[in-house]
Image 1: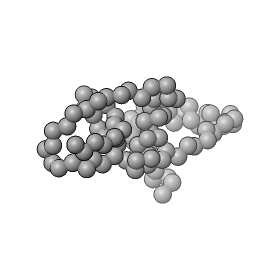
Image 2: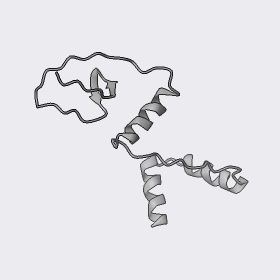
Image 3: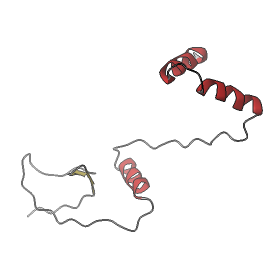
Image 4: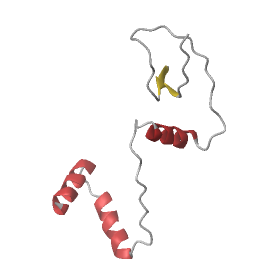
Length: 98
């Protein structure tokens, strides 16, 4: 019997392997499930595992902008209180930048 160990994510009722399995198509398998516990935040752990397995890209962390000036706060208040839809605001902002 060919025995393999692979981590998987259980999501929406489906186990999704995080690595390749050396199996012919339509193979019937028997699963022994061991829940991995006592990790840091489970979302963070899953994200790291997906990156290690090459199934996701590393998230780039952005430093938040701190200490906004009164003028910048006023400008943002006007932008986000505008009566037009957010999509239009985003389009206009992109046009200004490019």
